[in-house]
Image (tube, rainbow, N blue to C red):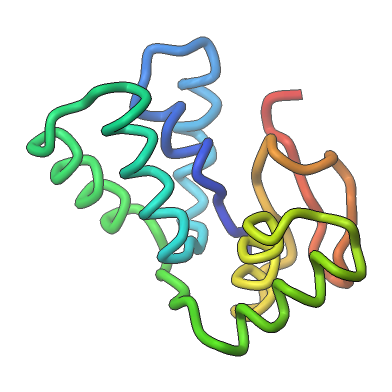
Length: 129
């Protein structure tokens, strides 16, 4: 199973050169977390200046292609804290890693962490390399 980071969804909704690869990654029906939905909304609204109607539709598209959405629980947050403290990553990256691990994902698809880096049984893959 895979876990998809925010940038995959953002690129998939743009005409960026990375869009075709991002759309390809969506076919795997990976997991996401509530954090990914929030970050996506923030980027679409504040950076890309998309209207709320567009964001509503885009969020529905995300729900249609993912396997499931991981909640931010005290356990996920505690695991993220430990990752940030012990592995030297930011707390928000830690939340992504911890959410992925909480549902047993083996691969985290993102361009935000070092390609090939391992967090126990979870490996980071940058599809845009």
